[in-house]
Every structure is written in C-alpha cells, then in structure tokens.
Length: 260
Ligand SMILES: O=C(O)c1ccccc1NCC(=O)[C@H](O)[C@H](O)COP(=O)(O)O
Image 1 (tube, rainbow, N blue to C red):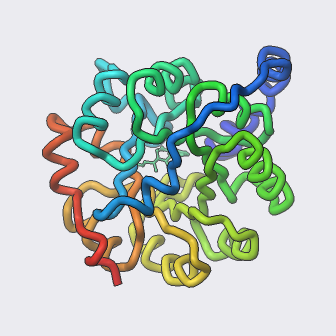
Image 2: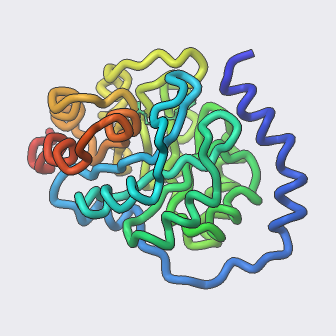
C-alpha cells in the first residue's frame, strides 16, 4: 500500500467526524480574493508559495514552524498566492493554520489537502480558502465533476492536479480553468521536471492556465518550466528551507514573456 492510499484511507475514516462538526454550519457569503484572477493578473509567472511543516517524502522541513510569520513573509514578498497544507496526519498541517493565515493576509489561499468528499470543501470555505485542490490520481471523473460543482457553489476556485497522460485524459474534456502538473509521483515520491515538459503543451492547448508543482529549487528549474510555457509555479520545500523568503522570491521571479 502506498502513502497516497494510506492518506486517502485516513481521510475516509475522518469524514463522519467532520460531517457531524460542519454539516449544519452555514458558509457565509463573503467576497473571496480570487485565486485564478491573481494568477492571470500577475505580470510575472505566478508564484504559489506553500506553508508545509512536514511531508511524507522529506519528514520535518521546519523545526521551528511559525506559519503566521511565513505567511507574512510571503505577503511582504508579494507572492501571487499561498498554499496551506491542511492535512494533519501526514503533513502536520491543519485547518486552524488555514484559518489563522486567512485572518492575517489578503493573498489568495489554496487549501492543499486530499479532498474526497464535499464536506472537506465546505471546511476549506469556512476556514478562509479561495481555492481547493482536486487530485486526479485519487478521484474518478464523475467525482471530479461533482466536487468542482461544490467548490463553485461556495465561490471557490479549483486547481485540478495531474501527473501523467492518463490523468490528463481523465480531465481533458471537463474544462477546468486551472491545471497543476505535479512533478512528484505521489505513489513513489519520484520527482522530475520532465513531467511538466511532457504535459504542458496538451494542457495549454486546452486553454487552461498551467501550474508546475513540486521539485523546483533553483533559478534554472524556474527557467526550464517557464520556457516550456507554464503560467505559474507551486513551491514548497525551497521556500520552507530558505533563510530569506524575499531573496528566493526575487530569484524565482521571471517575466511571463519568457514563456513560449
Ligand atoms: O511532498 C510530499 O512528500 C508528498 C507526498 C505525497 C503526496 C503529496 C506530497 N506533496 C504535495 C505536493 O505536491 C507538494 O507539497 C507541493 O507541490 C510542493 O512541492 P515541493 O516544492 O517539492 O515541496
């Protein structure tokens, strides 16, 4: 059994508890900062900077984890959007972190989790997210459609994530406006930027905005995926381990014109 399967099993076990806690709550009709609009509006390639204490592949990334300080540093450096890991069991994240970050910053927030049930989307909305992640590797096509509709209902954008040709085939006729190509194989943890290079043309041709996710550590990594044509980057570990968010943000900033 892979970690991804274990993560999904853990989510399935927790759904009843979450339904009991959140099902009767009303999602207030608040105006959310638009995640997709921020990516479109950025004159540079969009940078989605992640708040992630730990991961299954790398263990603890930040010993003195201070999510609010990280969020403030991201906002001060003018990253385009922030991704907040809300999974507790495998990433040491949580919805209270998303909640606190959303109180602190105005930058649009992605609820980065392994969503398998509509109640998790309601939780994202209640805790201040602007966008949710749907992972094609763990969802059937019909589930992707159903969950995207739930996100729409709450006024949330959706980032749908693929890693290979089969997953692209699964989603390609669903008109998702924002597609992430994850360079990490979530079963084996193997990371290669070639994944982005292989899938970007097909995704771009569909008219979607494309984000390259995972395994971006250097300016030359950024230039490689930028030249391939992506609209943005999702970066976790490199930001979590840097001594200076501002310096790394500068190093990773490239004009959109660099795209093909
Ligand atoms: O990061 C992991 O080890 C991991 C394992 C299993 C499922 C998902 C995982 N990570 C989620 C992500 O895709 C990353 O947090 C995100 O793209 C940033 O990646 P990186 O810049 O390499 O930290």
